[in-house]
Image (cartoon, rainbow, N blue to C red):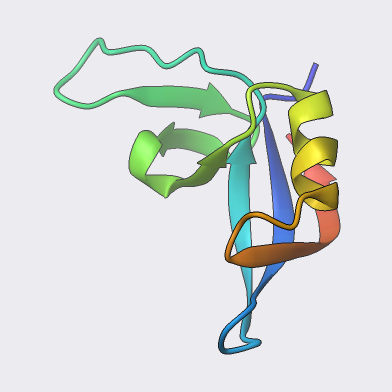
Length: 79
């Protein structure tokens, strides 16, 4: 089961596009001074996560959503 997804987002106001990581679960371990998650893309801090979707269904709901100030244009990969 993937822990994060790398997506392309576009900001609604500026139309700039960026790649971001979205968490697909809320399991963050606080063994050190910061929460981190060991994933296939390495150790990620919570600050490196753009959005917490909670699960894969949450990601697809976020893609369909119009309430955020960004749109998800593409899913690059799951890790």
